[in-house]
Image (cartoon, rainbow, N blue to C red; front, side):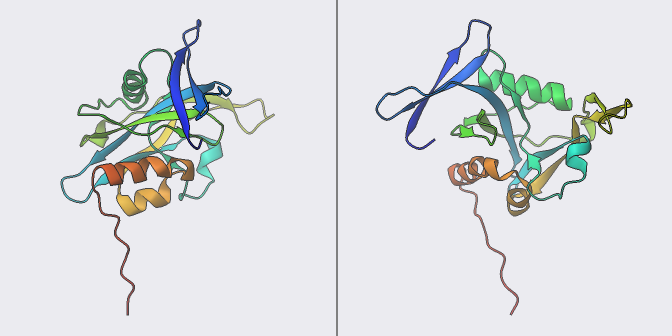
Length: 190
């Protein structure tokens, strides 16, 4: 988005949108918002919580570059409250802690993602995902059930960068910089 100022607007129907304004104050088309949580635990080296979407479209893709921070549509109201509520609805887990607002990013589809970093060591054995129904294979007339979230897991920082969707890299890199996490390169074997 370059040098732009991002503001929140509330449509009459209750949907929050972001309006990008360039440095000269010229408005651009409004964008619908997503909000998400970059959950990490850092008793030593930081570990990042990522999720892998469920369903037939994601199951056949390679593992690298297909994971995401937990996120969803922001709905109406406060993006942080929306992110926390949606996280609990999607995973059955509750995140508590001090939330750090990260710089919003524009995702591949043009939606703006507001994310918040928070330290929270969750017990993932309590994870549960909702299911959705989809005609699969397409045109077969057969309805199949799939989990919305296939897997949720903590990863070390280097692994998280490899697994994370590339448009979300700036969130992880900003969190690493803000929280002074070292991004170590692997030493080459000699």
